[in-house]
Amino acid sequence: MAGTSLMPRCVRRMDRQVRGDISVALLARHVLEAMEMAMRDWAEDRVDDPMGHVRLMLGLAFQGVTKR
Image (tube, rainbow, N blue to C red; front, side, top):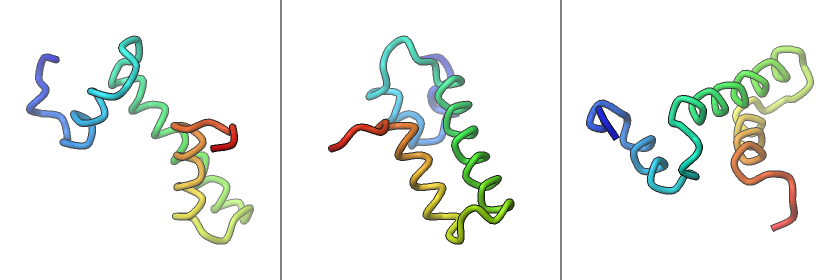
């Protein structure tokens, strides 16, 4: 990937594990939207623990909603 050295290390590591048809830009957008949704829920008093909710939303984004 061109410009790999400019990417954060966590993105470089993820790039090796993400499906080939998913771009880093799309992945970043997906993560950002999950984080924004979690923070919006906290701001609107839907949740008490914003960081726990961010973890939950990111878990849903990456692992889906099926049982493990």
